[in-house]
Image (cartoon, rainbow, N blue to C red; front, side, top):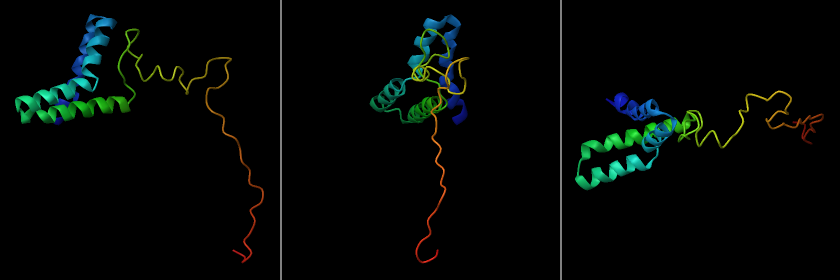
Length: 120
């Protein structure tokens, strides 16, 4: 049951059948934290305690997707998310002729380690 409910929010990706703009709207409705908290508020107000685990699983699914790097979608392309726009380059791929975007680590060479006076 948990696995079925954990994968249920992926149904919001069906919006991609209707194009990028509609899909981004539908996907973002299901993948922001407001939707499960709104459902939780309805569960609380209407006293439906059997639905509250669904809210927790939905929030866990959103968090897991964020952990994997899937964020809220832009209307430009499926891979354009609010997480990928924060880093406009892929640190694993360098553009031809461009300097590496990776931070350079300085080398520290220890040539002499002084001994303590007691010989250890």
